[in-house]
Length: 285
Image 1: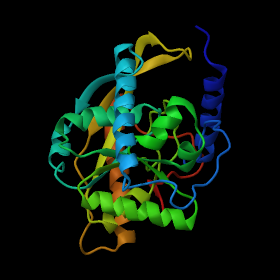
Image 2: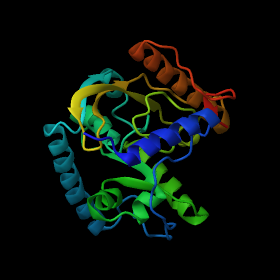
Image 3: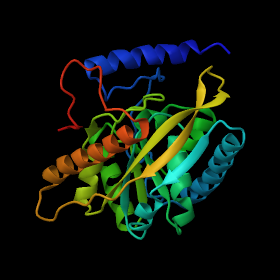
């Protein structure tokens, strides 16, 4: 099968971005977007219509992803370290994961779902995913326990307040600290500190998850091998009581990166190295 021109272009761009150290930039050719309006997103589902809509959408989404698994389009080979999730499952948790595929959030959900009670996995997504997309993906982006991170100050306050409310209720919030999605990129990228700031502000742990990839024998519609995921759930990182929010944010991000790096080097059997011409630091401060 011929390899997708679009995916080949993304791989070329990825090589350029890594060389220049532009790890936080988006690679995908996403459509033009617009900012969220105040009150547009019912972050904590105060409205009955939001609660009902989310329940229906979650069922639709689960059915969609389970069919992808049956067809071999999403392959979750192994889940390691589930005991680390069980250790923190009774309270609010910020889960961090590497971001390389639109389906990777379901792999995280699938790993922890058997050990969730009535809790949910909330996903922080880019604003444009919420406001721009149509079709099934747009429907899921807007309704499946998603928290679009806003560009305007007013709506960002709504977002931040919702994160605090949800964590206090014991919910689990998935944040991609690498920011943009880099398709099938296997290395950990330097982390933004936002996820760790939320954890520190709300005095909850961060649970690092690093998904490693292997080629399968199945070729996808894009002409590339479907990847088999190993979901590695690592020990929780806690904010220190005697540190400031900023100090905690930086130190927790660095520790998260180092834990991901250890998994990468152990799984792939090679030292983590980048083509970047300048020094690559664990996080952006």
